Amino acid sequence: MKAIRMTLMAAIFLFAAGAVNAQSYKNTFKLGVVGGASVPSENATANVGLDVAYQNLVTPHVGLGVATGYNHFFGKENGSVKNNSFGVVPVAGLVRYYPKSEGFYLGTDLGYGIITGADKVASNSNVDMPSGGLYLKPELGWHNKQWNVFAHYTKVFTGDAGRIGDQKFNAGSVGLGVAYNLPLGQ
Image (cartoon, rainbow, N blue to C red; front, top):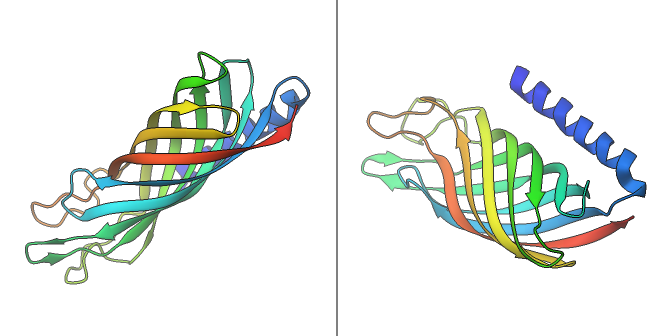
């Protein structure tokens, strides 16, 4: 819970900092979809999700903001273990580096990933589903004023929570995404 409170406080701070700088640089609301293959794929096969973010360009090349959304991971049957599907709701800060006004960019989201869904990792197990962990989503992509198209690695680090025998719980994927940028003014 302490990590969630700290992440929420950081998100509020970043949002407030963006609002203060709104007169000088461009503010953007980003709405996107992502999909990917679970890696390693012991307990999930793939994921699809929705990304929602607010970004403030604090310089012409650096954007800061907050990010959330929902990622759904599809459970996988792994031998005798029937893994349940689950969701991840990130509460994160974002940073982006844009070398030019259009072209390639680098970025990451960093915060806390809340795991939602079933109470147990598998339908035939008593192992509790992890509640969440450190959330990381680095991405490399292409952008213009309206669109971002990117490749990403998404991971929630849960430690040993959710382990069933030799199967370690995994909430990670590699995939692609696209986001539409809605300008909020200068």
